[in-house]
Image (tube, rainbow, N blue to C red; front, side, top):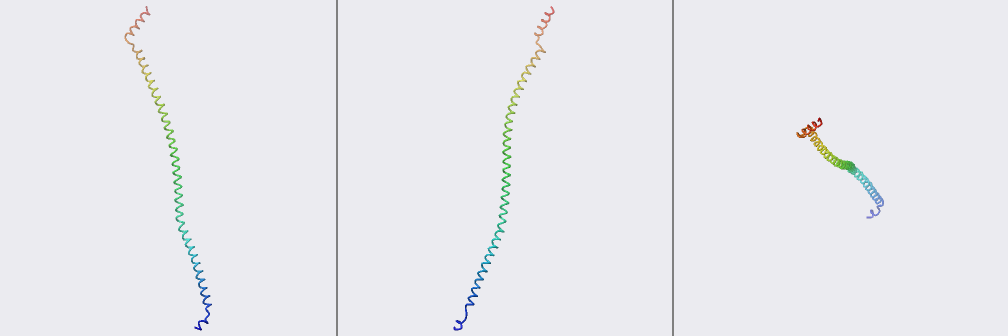
Length: 139
């Protein structure tokens, strides 16, 4: 045992401490490297879904603007329909008035035709009266 007590352990302790410091430094470096790698890997894999999300959002925005454009056009068409219905009502009123006017004119034309026919073809007694009147004039 005497020989063991004479043995200097300080060198072994220093070497052992140095070994643990180096192991600790190595573990920290590896952990940091692993963390960086993990972060880089994570960022790389996160980029793809983010890009897809941006594409989907762009398409959604484009779709929303197209839908708004269609809604604006539909509103414009609805206004045109209201205007055209108003014009239709107005034209129907004018047409009804024109038909009534045509009916009245046709009735007058029929009456005038009857008068013309009556004048062209006087009844027999009228002809006799006219002859009598003509004879009286001659006398």
